[in-house]
Amino acid sequence: MTALLEARDVTVTFRARGAEKRAVDGVSLSVGGDVPRITAIVGESGSGKTTLTRLLLGFQRPSGGTVTFRGRPLAALSGAERKRFRREVQAIFQDPFDVFNPFYKVDRALLKPLRAFGLASSTADAYAQAEQALTDVGLRPQETLGRYPPQLSGGQRQRVMIARALLLKPKIILADEPVSMVDASLRATILQSLNRLKEEIGISLIYVTHDLTTAYQISDDVVVLYGGRIVEQGDAETVIRRPSHAYTRSLVAAIPPPDPDKPWGEKTAA
Image 1 (spheres, rainbow, N blue to C red):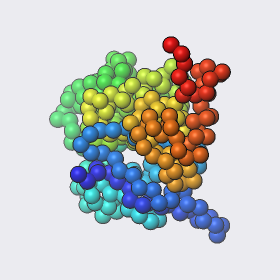
Image 2: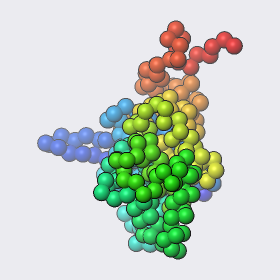
Image 3: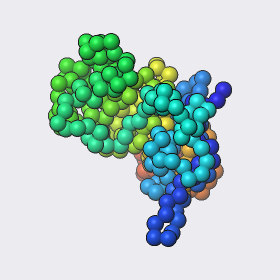
Image 4: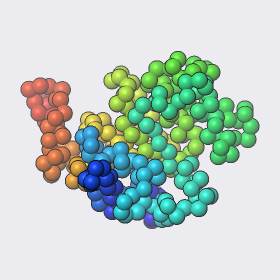
C-alpha cells in the first residue's frame, strides 16, 4: 500500500551571502498506512526537524526530491486534492498562544474549520462536535468555550489545538514540540491525549522533539536527525536502548537518570 504522506530523498538548501547550507539532506520518510503508528523525529536544535516538518505540511518546497500525498506530489495537487490534504494532514505547533487570535474566543478556532470544510450541518451541530472533541482531550467544555485564549493555561490552549485537529478527522497529525512549552505536570496529560488519537481513533502521528525521554514513552518508531540527515531509525526500543550511531548514543547519554548513580536505561534490582 502507498504511504499516505511520503518524503522521497528530499533536500532543502538555503543560500545566504554566497554560502549554502543544507537544512535537510536526502531524507526519505513515510507516514500513514493500514496500521496507525507514532513516529518520533528527534535531534538537537538545527538538526533539520522543523524544516522537515514544514516540507511535510507543504509550507516549504524542497530544493530536491518530492513530497507526495496519496501518491501525488504536493506541487501537483488539484484544488480538491489540496483541500483533502489540508483536512487529512493536521499540525500541532510548539507554542499554542501563537496560533490563537487573542481578540477572539477559543470557540472561533474550533468552529471555523468545521464551517470551512463543511463538516457541520448547523451551529448547534458544530458546537456539539466541539464539545465532544474537548472532552476527548480531557477538557471540560463548560470551562473552555466562551473564554479568550489568555484566560486559559498553556496546557489548556495546547489541548484546544489538539481538539481542533481532531475535529477535522485527520489521518495524520504532525506535532512539533507539542509539550516543550508546558510544565512537567501537564506533559503526561498531553502525551496521553496524543496516544489516544492513535489507539482509539486510528490517527498516525509524527512527534517532533529534542527530548528522547518523551520520544521513548510515546513512539513506536524513532528517526534521529543530525545535520539534516537521518543517521539512525527503527523501532523506539531498539534505537534508544541499543543505539548504533555515535550521535544517538550521545543523546541517550545526555538524558538525566532517575538514579544519579546509575546510567540511563540500566535496570535496577527488584
